[in-house]
Length: 131
Image (cartoon, rainbow, N blue to C red):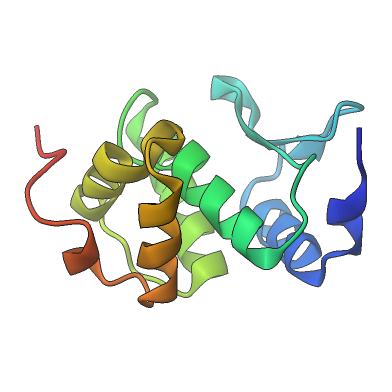
């Protein structure tokens, strides 16, 4: 496994945001950043070689637990971490839309376009992901 991510300042900044907001956060020997241990919400730090890689990974891996699949407290925690790090104000509904379009790395090019747009929700369309 590569430790290139360790040399990227933005990854260190993200880890600090996680640690400031989630007292139980830790990094495993396999380079998994456990963000919310109770629900095993994590991202794998390996293979992050640029700030864009980190942002794509955050949106594709964390969009689901930020709006569904875990309790409301954990959802708010994940949204807070995402919003603090990215400088955004995504709501639960925004995260549902993000998850519908970008979750599970369905469309990496769209994810990059969304990030490069300054997180313009119109890039993703409307209403998809609302339940």
